[in-house]
Amino acid sequence: MLLGVNIDHIATLRNARGEGSPSVIEAAKICISAGANGITAHLREDRRHIKDNDIYSLKNDLKCRLNMEMAATEEMQKIALDLLPNSCCIVPERRQEVTTEGGLDVFGQTEKIKKFIHPLIEADINVSLFIDPDENQIRSAAQTGAKFIELHTGAYSRAFNKTNEQEEFLKLYNSAILAQSLGITVNAGHGLNYENVQRMHEIPNLHELNIGHSIICRAIFTGLDDAVKNMLKLVTKS
Ligand code: PXP
Image (cartoon, rainbow, N blue to C red; front, side):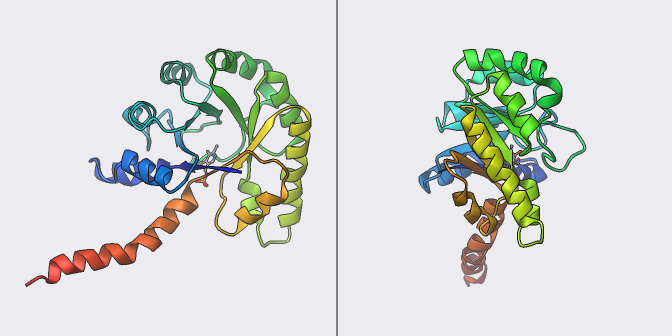
């Protein structure tokens, strides 16, 4: 199973000060040198975290394997066709949401999605649809011509260690099997952390997990001790 690291939260932190630190590119370099198989970044319509410069720099300067998350809008399609990332994950987007809340409704707009992703597929971009683990969504995704889906693991992640964990896990499991039987490669992501990620191994042939928040949170705690000690050395130097 591959790991794509979502670095949106590095950009959120950088944007809090409106300057260049922490650098998204430096963070991506560390992820890749640590062994991550790729970088995922969501260019939102409101550019609240990742900016256009970031996404171009990740692709053209760092030349990392890049998964661009994007809404199904004309503007994003134009950028993706210019940028040519390795993959595009089509996500629903609402301005007010804190993060991507639900999966893309492919069932309700199959023809629209099919038309939208066609030029991206023609441009040799691996197009993935971020959908809930639901039979209708999966069958519809297969009809669009997308060769990849990313199963939304948010409900499973929230249910982890609760009474409905198994129910939510089985939705993912059955959805992955169904999608694979329809010739679709299955990725998964959202809300995965160092505990709930373990069960992803029970799902056969998952291709890639995209994980962001828990990794960036862990990095703060694994790095804070060192950061304070280094500053202390400078502050206490007499
Ligand atoms: N996959 C998709 C499609 C997402 O929208 C996100 C969140 O941006 C992730 C994966 C990563 O989720 P998390 O930050 O909770 O690990």
